Length: 143
Picture 1: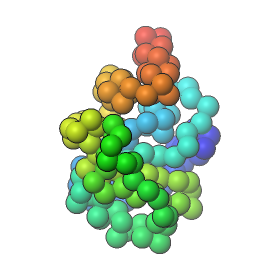
Picture 2: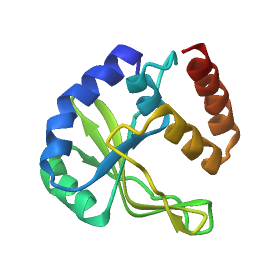
Picture 3: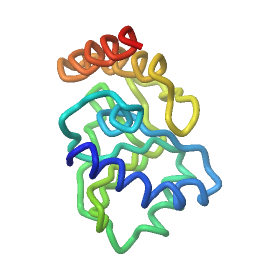
Picture 4: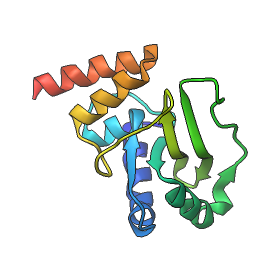
């Protein structure tokens, strides 16, 4: 998705996310685009929430639910409730109870700050995350 498509997707879904009465946060490329980081594209919008939030979104977005396999339990990431949605505005992945290396991912606010996104990208540690962290650092240092 282009940055404009990511922004439009987020604008369409934000009311549902706010209405579910559970904490949630954006992470990944989509979150960076929403923050204004100059990325060319994002595959989807990644939403992290608790188990209750994931259940509420599954009920609200059930018509858009796709079959998807969660990350394997032997990998560095594990969602206790993983769902992929093909919304009319673009794809969304919801990770309920996301754990990274056996620990719950701690996120602050619906759109974590650049510093918090940097922490998350480094925690994930995959090559693509490290590359995004470098781009985010450059963006943050440019002010």
